[in-house]
Length: 258
Ligand code: VGL
Ligand code: ZN
Image 1 (cartoon, rainbow, N blue to C red):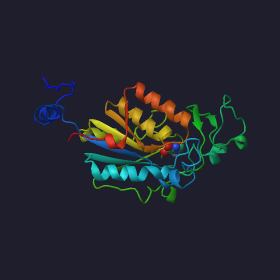
Image 2: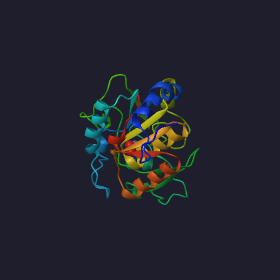
Image 3: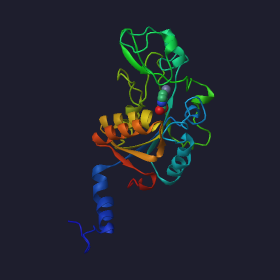
């Protein structure tokens, strides 16, 4: 039974003693930080986070992430990269390369614009939001931003490499047909707690965080280390994440008790 003071607060040193001598050994928590898509194209390139109604700048995440990496001893750090071939299905420039389904709002490829949602026909009928060409494999736009700290013993996860299917999450493609190696990398290290940050909050960060919960990790979004495209979609995705049992915190609250 934990000691409480006269205001009902738990005695901190007693909790710490309990944690270090007993609970920690039982629970054996291990933390990972997933840094999602902090790549040039989302900061200064073709899909830069700076003009949206969220009025956020992609570059603002860099000092926050670097400070966390300096101060907090995560057991494991993962950097994901959007890593598309030139003929990727998500690029507005490529719409004419695939047949459109009759259900698609656009019947002629030449009408397609950025942010339109089209439906492609084929073995799998696929809805796809259109983006300008971005994060093309081995291009400058696909590199991690030069100011982002990359720590030792971290790994890279590339996603969106199949030309015919998009992948917002660092775990699964958008149709959940195939997985990147991420869940294996986390489970083989005994990771229990996953912290997620990066770009874009409403697209790849939230999708990654939701799949992390579905894989059974205790999952926290570090909100001040994220920037997104649109206020509306940021709020929608936050809601979905919270309803699944995720937690949203700020970087100064990250204190894995290790
Ligand atoms: C992303 C749009 C298209 C992201 C990737 O990393 O958030 N957004 N591809
Ligand atoms: Zn992409």
